[in-house]
Image (cartoon, rainbow, N blue to C red; front, side, top):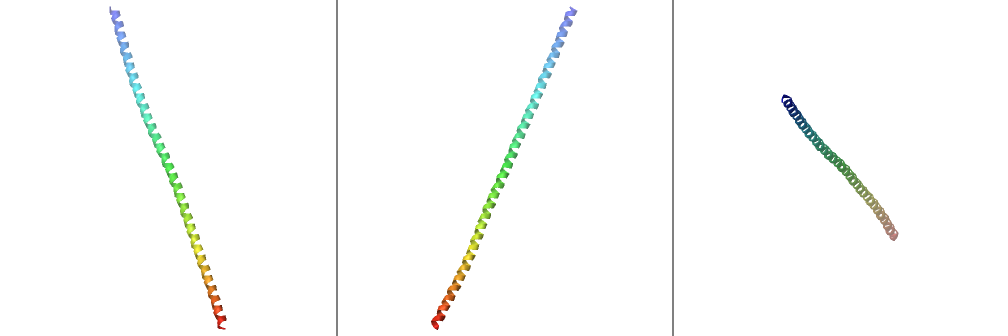
Amino acid sequence: MAASRKKVSRKKAKRKVAKKRKVVRKTRKKAKRKVKKKAKKKAKKKAKRKVKKKAKRKAKKKAKKKAKKKAKRKAKKKAKRKVKKKAKKKAKKKAKKKAKKKAKRKAKKKASRRR
């Protein structure tokens, strides 16, 4: 009887240990899962940030390109205006010369008529 009781208590003890192990394993698994979840979340955040950074960089590049285009357009306009101004000046000069010539001719005609 005493021996069998010992066996029973040993079985109980074994069961207790097994249960404890199971609990430990479960909690460990849970902890691991938690860590994994956290890591996943972190990775997601990182990825999001990366995407944001990339988008920012892209936007910056786009803005730069736009600015360059604008500057080019402005420069073109300026150049056109300059050319126009120059042409106007030239035309004015030409007109003056023509007027002078005309006046000279008129004067000559008048002089010859007087004679």
